[in-house]
Image (tube, rainbow, N blue to C red; front, top):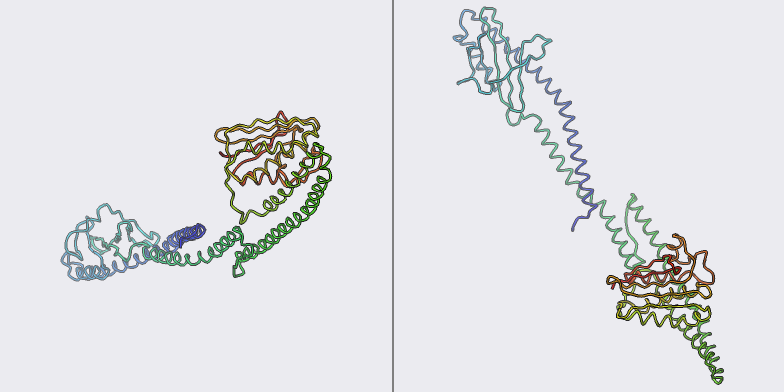
Amino acid sequence: MKPGRLYIKILISFALVLIVTEIMIFGLFVVTAGRIFHSRLERFTIAKMLTAKAYVEDKIRAEPRIPFARNQPLADLIRFLGNTHGAKVWLTSREGKHLIKSFDGSIPEDMAGIDPRPISPGQNSGVCWFSDKKHRLNYASVNIDTGQAEDATLHVFFRFKGKDIHHGAFALGLLTIGIVIALLIIPISRRITNPVRHLNASALRIAQGDLSHRADIPGKDEIAELGQSFNRMADKLEQMIRGGRELTANLSHELRSPLARIRIASELLGDHLESLDDELINTRLEDIGEDVEELDHLIGRIMSLSKPDIRQQPLKHDIFDPKQLISELIERFRSPVEVKKLIITSELSDGVSLSGDREEIRTAISNILDNAVKFSPQNGRVSVVMRSENSDIIIRISNTFPALSEADLEKIFEPFYRPRKTEGQGSGLGLAITRKIIERHGGKIKAVNSEDGLCIEIHFDA
């Protein structure tokens, strides 16, 4: 299973914290324990060198008349000290002449450039020491008091062995601990990320329409509390959605009942007035019938559009002529236009085709035209323009209306919102439904103030 981003972030965060912690521990060890060890090593070196000095001086004083080079007990002691300490030990005269060595061959070449420093000068030990851990070298020297005119210096030189390298063992131990902790971080990280991944999967299931699904996050920690809050949110969401569906269904049922009675009454009225052969009456009755059919159709569309965006039916992709659709809608509003003595103009481009759900787009444009006619003053103007620009289809519907504020231009697409300047009846749902339809088709809609009044502008990708 591919690790998630949160899992990787937690793992990297733990690893970085671990690395910083180990660096701090190692630094603390070097500053404290390392210095203590170094100080004790100096004191131990002083003690050993002073002990060796005492032994050498005793051997020399035991045979004061024998030169150093022919003093066999002294030579044996020097060799014993070299073997005991695993080092190269030699004795030199005041002039630097090599008198006795615990080893065969010449003095080590590493001695070149070594300048030993006195240690513990307060004790007047006379011991000098050079320590270079970079090259794994240690060297110490001490003056020998023979009680004669001929003085000497005792030298001890040895190299570190592999196991004695600086703080290597401690660093290796820290590295081992770090690797073990890093391996333990893997199950700990998964224990944190698995509930989060489960919550994400639950959210996706609810988004796909499974409103009854709930997240099961055991435990009493913060993530478990988040899971419980998530489930409470899902409960409220399910109640709201189901309540909205029931309200829409009940409202639509109640609206269709009077519409059915209006349809029947208009049909009966038409039968009674058929003998009068009055063209105006027949025209008005036809308009009433068309409006009833339109309202019935609109109620059905509202039921469909008011459903939440989950498990939504796929869009139809009808190829149709928007000019013909707009022309039909303009004709349908002929009666209210005549009543208010409005001037309606149209400029519709030919040869333009649009892909989408024809009935939904018809509802959207009808809502805009209805608002334009309804809220235009007596003897006002309504303008409809449709043309193609840069491969996009743009529809602009303007009507005589006072300029709105920027806030109102944004809010008129919100459900149940009506600007203060509007007069007449209206629910404030028309433009909200229209925006939902346009955005569902991948288009954009906006309201702007223009020279002709209020303009609703729609953009469709061709």
